[in-house]
Image (cartoon, rainbow, N blue to C red):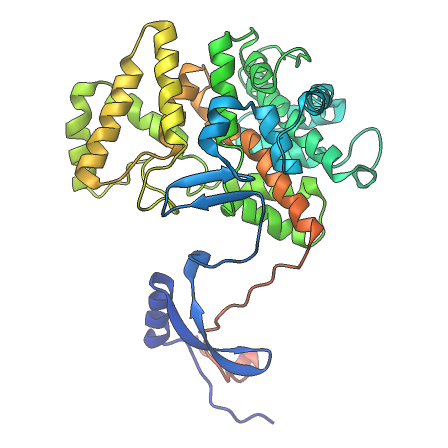
Length: 410
């Protein structure tokens, strides 16, 4: 019979938990039967958990590359479809490969009656990301057979092609608007705008949407991508892993900054109000959305400049530069007063707004743009798989003795 003394959580235990949660430290923990001193990296900050040939995010230099191509090269010259091929296959496509991929994506845009029924069965108040997550799960049961019979690339094509259709279909159903079916003759970005608005976008609008999707297509081991790889590491299928990623992106600390940045701009309203708004926000220690980045700490997010340029072009097309002047004035004020640079979300917000994307769909646009990156990482994970199973440092009570219920105090 055990005679060890009863232990309980004390104020010292609580203080220790708070200390560990706030700073990297070392604790004495047991791993595989031996007591070892191991560093704690909350949020996995600074921890390299694997290798990848897909993307390099260098926060010190402020650079971003997809498969070795600088994001600026791709932003200036490539299309979203070319980028999809690059992320999946490691090289930019030739014309024949690009035509084939574009045709395969166009062929898969329509959603099945089963997915339509899922969308129809959702509560009226359900948010777009919830609808996207729920309907994406239905894609694991295609009408032409078990998804297990499809190759990884076939499943990835299905997801990239159909998730924009799901997002647009749910949006229009929620607004009591008639469904707009996808068109095969439009590019991926132009087709999404067409399904949202029911009319073909201008060349400038389509090009801007294409650029925004390209810039959001991939960004290393961010939270949603890591969630996808954790799910994929269990040898779950691609659809399941992408559903995990969508669920993770929904969290306000990951997705959602672009929506909040736009709400801030609408609240400020005029350039004349920028200085007082920023001063007040800083005085109240309020976070200014769209600024700073977990990785780009010493330099600007390299994607932001290209969206800033697109914002200028959209304003030039309409002749109204109000949003451009407002956004750039906010950016200058925050950099001057706080030393923070705008990230991709900040300039993506007014770009999406001028493209007529409703604020409620901003995070969904982020999701459908990131699917090529998610699926590239899932396929890479499956190629050289190892179950992702980190350790934890146990800091709770020890040596406790079980007592019958009648002997337990309040």
